[in-house]
Image (cartoon, rainbow, N blue to C red; front, side):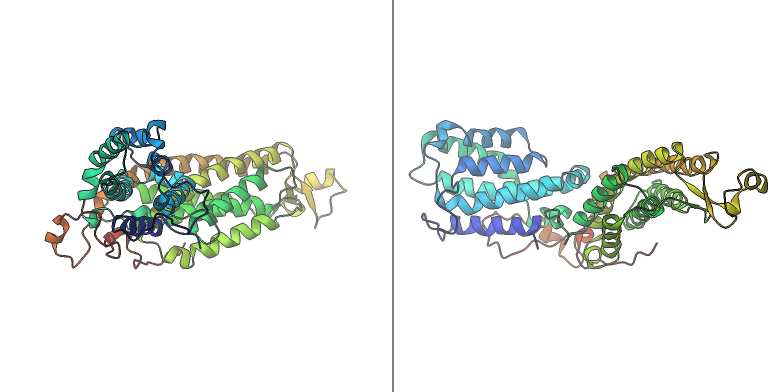
Length: 421
């Protein structure tokens, strides 16, 4: 399973500890000789990572200086190779989850930024004290130390972010399963192949389920503003898309191939009801389903476009039993127990009207959800049972990395609540 943001942060702390305590050797051989091992490479990866968070001007300036050619001539240090690789991997994870990170509450991005900058501060302090550091290099390191000093003084409990659960998008993470379903659904609905009733009904149904799960998750945000109507807006979207998925029994579409969509839909349903969801805390779950609802918007647009084309081209079939006796008499080739193409397009128009209404409700719900998620972090409380005085004890980043900061109440992995919609 791919490493999470939290695991990579811990790896960075351990690598920094080894370097700062002299355990790392100058001839580190755990990476290929060609791997970059200097401050320019580390600064480049750190800047790329922090750009997705809340990179301040002073830190950016210091990192840019460390990448300059003036500094680069004396900046190679094999001991930094592992750190460079870890910072690059962390940047890859954050970039692959850019949507979740961008929409996450600002305090969560800041906490993640602080964790990275605290580690950089310790390394910069260590490097600036080395005797073989050039004057330009030392000046750049001192700039980085000054820019990240506040982060290094933050107590560990204040650095814990709800974004630490993120990993590279893959089938073993809920974010990856949602991303795959959305991609398969959009590709399937927009492709040249013959669509089936299942294609349109299942995608509408999954959009409804994503809205329902988001509504359930938003109810578990502590101290939610009592005037906030986000759960209600999401439940309205759930009901609207449920109606859009409920085709009348006398309407169907032609025969096509839906294997890839069936597999992606089944995988998503299993993930929503399985361990991938259970191991997420309330805030983590909210961030994931928020991203899912945003991806569902794209699926909804593809769904509407496909249904509009089907309706316009009269591709829907209706049961002969639903047609009037006069119509059947005028069309004797239609068997009373058979099926006929939608004669006047009204069936398709009614289905399209339901989808148009559902799209409007979904847009309103997404707007409300984004607004609610931005203020969610104000609900984060101190971990229960912890001495309040401990929260104000300042700790330098070079403390041993085996001491883990406690998780906030809302990002606790032990939080688990049933969701059945």
